[in-house]
Image 1 (cartoon, rainbow, N blue to C red):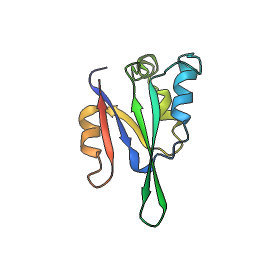
Image 2 (spheres, rainbow, N blue to C red; image 1 turned 30 degrees about the horizontal axis):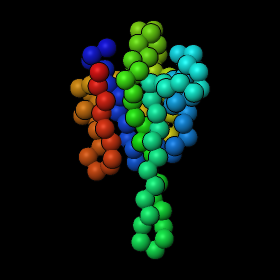
Image 3 (spheres, helix red, strand yellow; image 1 turned 30 degrees about the vertical axis):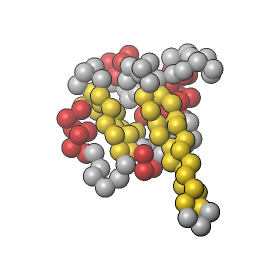
Length: 110
C-alpha cells in the first residue's frame, strides 16, 4: 500500500461526515470509537460579523486506505461515499500531479 495516497481537497468539503460513517461501517467500528478519518471543523469570524467555516477531513493513525477493498479493486469506503467528491485515491505519483495549486489540498501517503 506504500504506492497509494489520498488527495483531500479541503476547498470543497461540506462537513457531511459521510466519510467518517462509511469508514466506521466498513470496518465495524462503534460510533463512539475513533475511525480512520475524522472531520475537524474550524469556525473563523470575519469582518462584518460573517463566519467562515472550513471542514478538514483528517486521516487518523487507524487509516489503512481500506487495504482489503483496494486489493479487490474497490475504492476506500471514505472515497466511495464522499458526497462532495473532495477525496481522490490512487497512485501517489499520479495524484501528486493532480494536486490543485490554487486551492487548499493535501496529499496523504502511507
